[in-house]
Image (cartoon, rainbow, N blue to C red; front, side, top):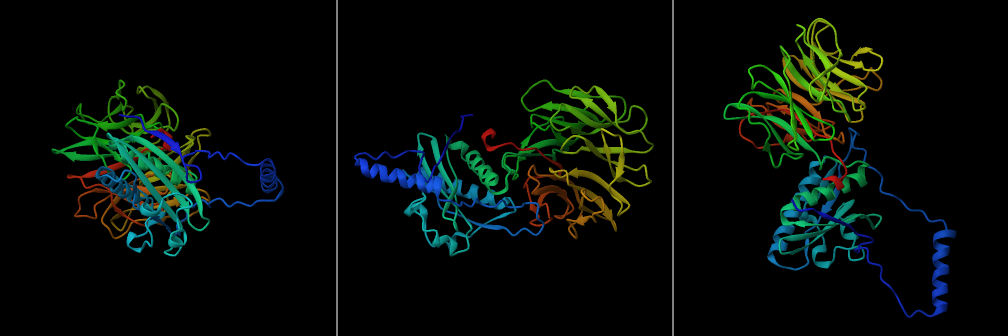
Length: 467
C-alpha cells in the first residue's frame, strides 16, 4: 500500500514564511521593538480549547459544522472524491458520541467557494447557527494521487486548532480522513480516539462460526479464520499484532494464537478445555481457562502456550479472565459462592475481591481503559442486560445500560473509553453487534452482515501517525 505523506498547516497556510524586503532601517527597528514588547513585556493570555470530558454521563454533544470540500482543480474526480471524503468525515465525527454534525441545510456560507483558510472565513456565519467547531477541507487530485488539506477551527475564539495535509492514493481517502479525526480527538479530548482501532467478532458463514475483523465503525469486514468449524472468543494483544481465539477445529476447544503479520502461530491444546483467552497489557502473556486438572481454573501462559502459573484454585468454574489496564489485576467469573459472580484478583498480593452483589447471575467482565469501571452482563427477571459499576469506591451501585431491548451481552470498551460494543438480539432474536456510549446512550447497529454476529472485542489504538 502506498505510504501517506503528512504535513501541517500553520496559521491557515502551508508552513510558508513570507519574506518582506525593502524595509527602511527605522521601520525595521520600530517593528522589532513592538514585537519585543508584545511577546516579552506585555502579558498575553491565550485560551486553549478545553478538553471534552468523554466519561461524563451527562455530556452534551458539541456541535460541529463540516463543510463541502474545495476542489482546487475543479475537475469531476476532485469533486466526487471531495464529496466522498466529506461524508466519511461527517459519519466518523458523528460516530464518536460526543460530537454532533450540524445539518448542512442550516449553513449560511460555503468556504469551498469563499476560502477554507483562516482569514477567509466569516466565523459569525458559524456561531450564528450554533457551531462551536468548524471543519473545512480542500482536495487536489492528479494521476491517482490525492492531497487533502484539512482544518479544525474554534469558531468563538476565531482560532485554528488543527491543520493537516495528507497525500496518498485515492484509495486511501478513508484512511487519511481517519488520521485527521484522530488529530481532532486528541485536540478535543486528550486521547487519539477510536479511529485507529479494529473490532474482532464471531460471525456465522455457511453454518460455521468464524472470526472476522472490521474497522471501528463496522466498515471493511474481513474473515480471519477458515476452520469451517466453531471459532469463538477473539482477544487482541495490546499491540494489535496477535489475536487469540478458541476453535473446535480439532474436535475440542483449543486456543489458537494467530499473528496478523503472517508469523507462525501457536496452539494451546492441553487435555480437556482450553478456553477464554485474554492478553496481559504490554506483554506476550495470556490468561486462559484450562481444565486438564479436572476443574476449570485460570492460568497464565506464554504466547507459545506454555503454562507460567496457576491463578485460581477453588471448586467450581473459573472463566472469562480479563486483565486490568495496568496488568496488575485479573477479573474473572466464578461460581465459588454458589452463583456466577465477578471477582478481581490482585496478581501482586494474591487478594481476591468480589465485585458484583446484585442479581444471581453476573458474568463477562470488561474493564474500562482507565481501570475505574467494570462493564458486565447480568441476568435479572430472566432478562440479560449490560451493567457498569464503579471500582473507585467499591460501593457504587451498578448502572443498567440496556433494557427492554432483547438480550444484551458481551460488552467491550473502545480504546478511549467513550463507547461500548456489545451483542444484542433486539432485531428478531438474532444476535447482532451494536454500539453505545459509555453512558448507554446512542445505541445503534454496527454491522449489516448476513448471519449472526457475537463476541465483539475492541482493539487498542495508537496515535494517528501509526495508522
